[in-house]
Length: 247
Image 1 (cartoon, rainbow, N blue to C red):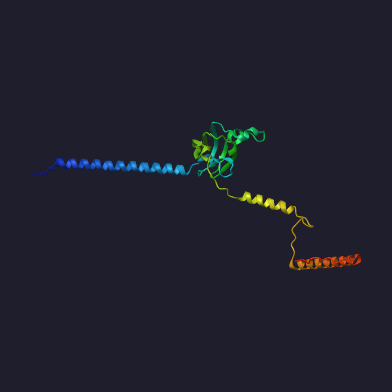
Image 2: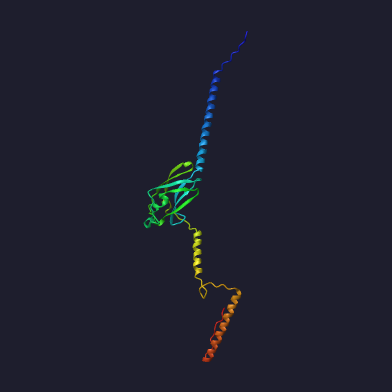
């Protein structure tokens, strides 16, 4: 006669513990999955931000005071292609009143009408925009929309605010640079070009031997002048004039 042993049914509290444990485990796994997804997403976004072009348009009212330069720079790490600009309101410069066919208005420059086919990383294009003396005191900000393409032909469209009024009233320090050195050298060149041989027209450099020879020549001339004056004085019955010796 066979003998059968029946499995004991779990107690109700054991079933509750197993259910809670399963739920907690599932919650931990879900949280870990969400965290891993967020980390992967942040890593991908950071990688894309580090490996993308970033075109910046800005005013530089300090480097060449009182001139104002408009700079276009790629601050990113990859090439920017087909860069275009749209200013609102349109760019206006006090130099526009002197515009010619060879020097058009600021808004009609090729870089703003046609754009930039490619802008390498670290490349900066600097354009003479205006002078601080020609800008209105109530300068209003303007917005420039910059559009360009990056790697994989991904497109970017970014609005940037340009405000010249932030520079008004600020103080600055004049720093001499290589341009000042060039101007000083040009002045020295002009002075040296005016030097000529002859009395009073140049710089005469003598060695000690030549100095002694010139002093001897001067003394001989003085002796000759004294002798001539003495002869004339004797002939005219006057006293011999005195000639001060050189220092």
